[in-house]
Image 1 (tube, helix red, strand yellow):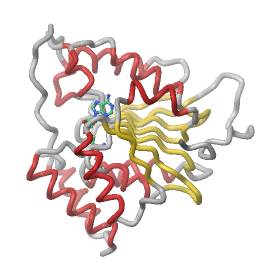
Image 2: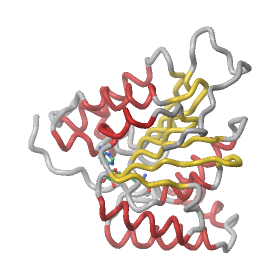
Image 3: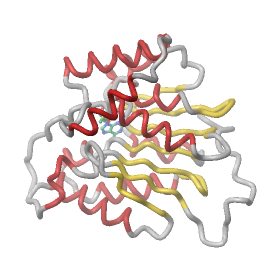
Image 4: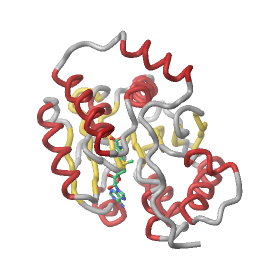
Length: 252
Ligand SMILES: C[S@@+](CC[C@H](N)C(=O)[O-])C[C@H]1O[C@@H](n2cnc3c(N)ncnc32)[C@H](O)[C@@H]1O
C-alpha cells in the first residue's frame, strides 16, 4: 500500500533501562576532546530538531565492532549522512590514510554535516557527497572495507518496497571481500514483527529476509535500539589471508 506518512524518529536513547545503563557506563569513558564536544552538540541539535541519528551507544557499539577487524579500515562508505554524526563516529576507527565517503541527499543537511566534520577536525578523513545514493553508487569504483547503510526506511517514501533489495545488492556490490556491512533500523520500531500493509515495513521485512539468507554474507541481527545488522562479506574460494583489493586508494 502506498501513501503512508514518514515513520516516527527512532529515539537516540532507547527506553530499555539496561540500554540506558550501558549508555551511562559508556559516558564514563568519554574524554573531553573537540571531536567529542561536536558529537555532544550534534546529539543535542538532533534531539531538538528531530534529526534521526544513531545516538551515542550505537555509535560506540559500531566503533567497537569495526575495531575488531584487521587490518584497520581504509575505505568506509556511510550511506545517509544526515548532519554528520555517524561519519564522525566512523572516523574514530579508521586506519592510517583511511577515508570515509558519506552520501546525503538533502543539501542542507550535507552542508551542516561538512561544518560539523570540519569542527571535529576530521575533514581530511571525511568526504561528504550531496546526492542520491542510487545515482552515486555506480560512480564510486571503490571496494569498501566498511559500509554503514542508514537510509533503509527512507527509501520507501517513494512507495517502492523493491528498492530495499536493490539497496542491499548495490551495498553488497560495493563491499570488499571480508568487508563489513552494518544496516540500521532492522526492527522498524517493532513493526517488522507482524504482516504490514505499509510498503516501508514490507521493504524492511524483505531486506531482513534477504540479508539473513544472502549467500555472500554472514550476518547477525543485533537486538538493541532499532536493530542493527552486522554482516561480513564471505566469498566462496577466497579466504581472508589472500591479498585484498586496494580499497581506499581510489576514493573519489
Ligand atoms: C537516518 S538518517 C542518517 C543518520 C546518520 N547515519 C547518523 O546516524 O548520523 C538518513 C539520512 O539519509 C538521507 N537519505 C535518504 N535517502 C537517501 C538517498 N537515496 N541517498 C542519500 N541519502 C539519503 C536522509 O535525508 C537522511 O538524512
